[in-house]
Length: 364
Ligand SMILES: Nc1ncnc2c1ncn2[C@@H]1O[C@H](COP(=O)(O)OP(=O)(O)OP(=O)(O)O)[C@@H](O)[C@H]1O
Ligand SMILES: [Mg+2]
Image 1 (tube, rainbow, N blue to C red):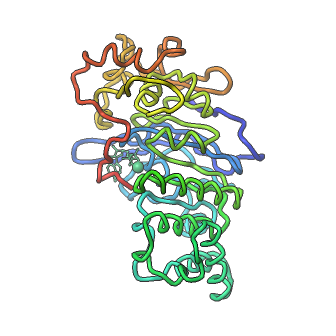
Image 2 (tube, protein in one colour):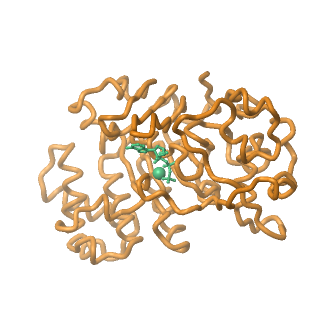
Image 3 (cartoon, helix red, strand yellow):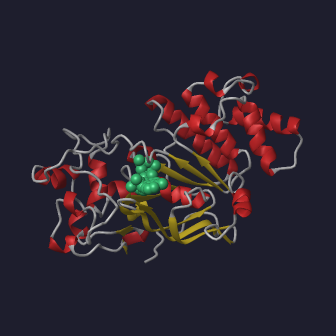
């Protein structure tokens, strides 16, 4: 089933992902990393994708960038500028990467080359797609450093990544992402490696980059708090699927899927007086050899026998929202503590905070 949850901004969609499925054959069976994800983005629109570690957020984006390992089995379609990226050859993909769609990864050190100064690296991103003189590109690089609010950009451009702080390095990566005026910026956990005060500055720099270029943005995070001030729409992912979608207000104030309510309960909030946080008990499911039914059922306080038999489809709800739960009506209006603490003692498993440490294997 394909559903879109907003009429978004700015004309025709620039990126349309439809029924994307990614599987990895492994020694222990097939990993169902992404199971039928669909979304579309219009210019200037920010889509937040949120979910626990292993829910398929990064794999979805790597598929869009054509960066999955060859062993991956991919189906569905990813349409960008009239081209289905899943059918495109390496030459076509190289044109899209960086110029059409740019990516910002979690750890800036993995995106930057330690042996070139940052000015040259930004200039390189420009000359890779444009026929401009080196000195012109170098001047643009300094302007870009200024735009992402790096002080003394002229001098900083001559420095190497190790000479910059983590926050500044991530600004350089954002400058590289902006270098070719992309139509889409995908930021995968762009602030996770940074401390809280720097996080806010980086989000600001990303917002500035997005506004300046008019690009659409996919902002991926495990932290609903990051999404709140940034996104127009939110997709909540669980076990490779979108399980709820809506505007930020829909997701924060009227969630209709118990997992979303659980994420909210694990989030410190200043606007609501709560006595304590309510973590979702249990762990995210393995996506190998998945049993039938809703993958959230073992952790869900509302679970009934039908939940272990039938996986609920993503069904359209009020005002362009969508949720995948057999009992959405029972979620509406509930407080996370009310729903989750009552039964948490029954679920015999270790509590997992939403910001559980990432699996190093999947930590991209
Ligand atoms: N190359 C691979 N081979 C096998 N399994 C993989 C591979 N890459 C990812 N996976 C699996 O696919 C699933 C989704 O991974 P993904 O990296 O998209 O999660 P994520 O939501 O980005 O998590 P995190 O918050 O930790 O970054 C995980 O179960 C992961 O182990
Ligand atoms: Mg990831």
